[in-house]
Image 1 (cartoon, one colour):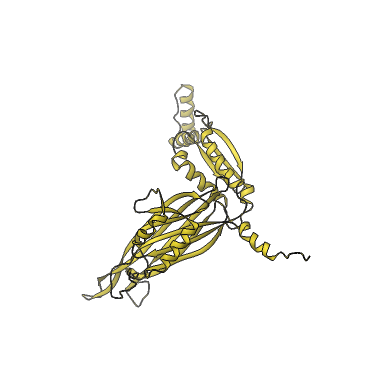
Image 2: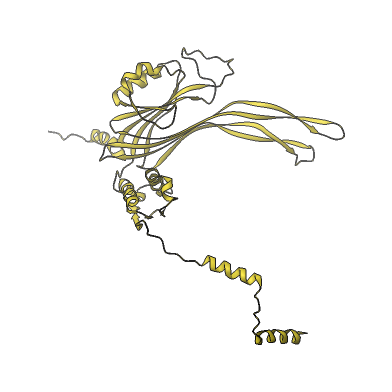
Length: 362
């Protein structure tokens, strides 16, 4: 039989008959050809390929295992995400030592400016005074209005002002004497220039999420627990330009408040005609988030009002300071953020060092 098949193939070849290859082999060749289409990077818009040395910046940062992430974030903020995902073709990648960028000369100039701010900018950590508070009634603005200089914001409901450092102290002290005032954050923050810092005050709230078939032999059904993190998350990324005398900051804030858990009773089939009843809970959550970018002079204080937003925990007192323990309404308050630039770590240590120097005896 083998001899017959061999003879037929030889006859076909001698007669000029084309023997078709197997479909599987054709598919493999086509796949190989499709994967082997090497291309040259297009330069139709004058794109150039450059590398930037990040070691002078990343080498002095020990607070983060990936300090180059700050470089990536600030490049995206300055250029926009669409710059890297639309025409003309461009890309960039950052390691701890090197930033690699391929794009047009105009984009390269923006990237170079960001890198110069970080690499050749402040080589010391900056100190910020951060205070986050809430006031039940927004009527505080009536008396404070003459001291505040309004600046533009993008998100509706959010207001921002600049105020002198002296008036900021006066305003905050006046707010703290109000009966409906509550302070959430009051910290002197030390952070490397360009890096991010996150404040988190969250409390886990447990509830019965659903019911499933039991994995034990002594029960047919069991409750499945759920958890919601209630509280606020505040993230700030600061870039100080001492030459221009400005603070550039991105503020991200997220709030989640559990207003209540709605109970539901489920009827579950049991043995025979009997039924079992189990209760689950459906969370009613009020959430709010904000992301804004601010730039202000070093000698001013930034004041941001996020508006009347959900307040995690018990309802805050009224403007008269009278709490209502029987109230079932969720808490709401005007959330206020104060940010003041206090200088670099070296500036803060200089007075202390001067005080420890003994004067020479005459």
